[in-house]
Length: 432
Image 1 (cartoon, helix red, strand yellow):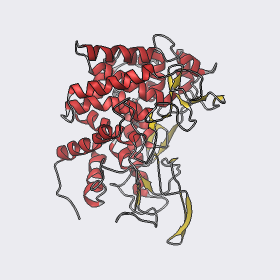
Image 2: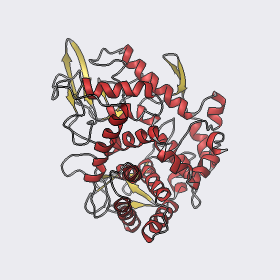
Image 3: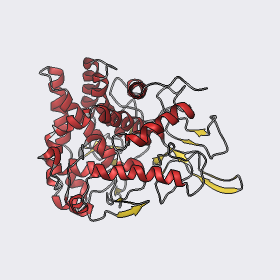
Image 4: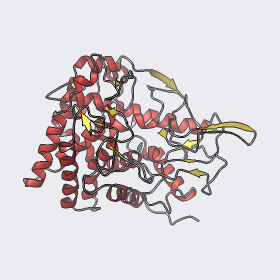
């Protein structure tokens, strides 16, 4: 059964509205925390909560919620994080201004003995800063939003997170201290370094950014030279917040492109990989692509049509090196909309009208689907039972950046973002 085809404008409006409902209905109104995924008794994700804070302005501008309700939700969230316990206790909410990856939806305390996450804290902070830029009215409510967002950002000790090394560590726990992994190689940590460099209180040294870019890998795939990172989301998440068009750091000036163009090339490489389909998965083509870190139908190994296939659960799938098990993430396809609308819009039509992946799902597209997996729960294959806030947020926000540039415009006015970019060596474009 196929639905009546809408105009592109109507399709995007409808998709934004249905995905925005996730942040309306999957949040705790008492503390503003947003659930990580739509599973029973699941905790909150601080990254999803940060994305929610950034989507509220879009919701206001699109008429999905009132400014007053958006301000109230935002202030509730900021008050919770400002007043939540920071310390080395194993059940605290955070430490040194950073926060644990997962928090109990009701109490706001650390869940699952998870790690204090520097990058997920970054997405939370970015949402707070976006809110402070949007809520600019001279009212007590909106003034408090600006004050709390500023204080929460200033409290973060980025230098502590270096743990006496050049690059920032990925995680810390009170039981074991810092993990050995650091943020190196091109990935979603671009935003982390920009926010860390822009701090007026505990800033990262400029040498940390130099050390990070020294670990980059410049590669060539399918005729495109680009800064490599396999999962597509790594080419998108920092771009949710920062307009990288025509601004360059030292690395990109040497290559003659900018990070926006780099993400455009990564998007084309994703499509080319699907067209070539080297592992012969079902459904891959010019309108069906988008491989990233995501959930999947595994873990399992089975014989499918005479071929041994290994299927994964949540793993950092990537292109073209892999891993790849036939799992496509529609949200990551959509999050490339600003980079390559000529590729994304046909894929959107394919997902809606040919595969019927949106109909009947409360928040639009589910996280992933896999047409090669034999245990099919949908006419076109296995479809994830879940929606994830970390998937829905970029879809919603990058669609808005394509349509109006709202979040980019807000963050261009954030002095901490601008200072961080300048200290990283960016210039040109809107930074002139």
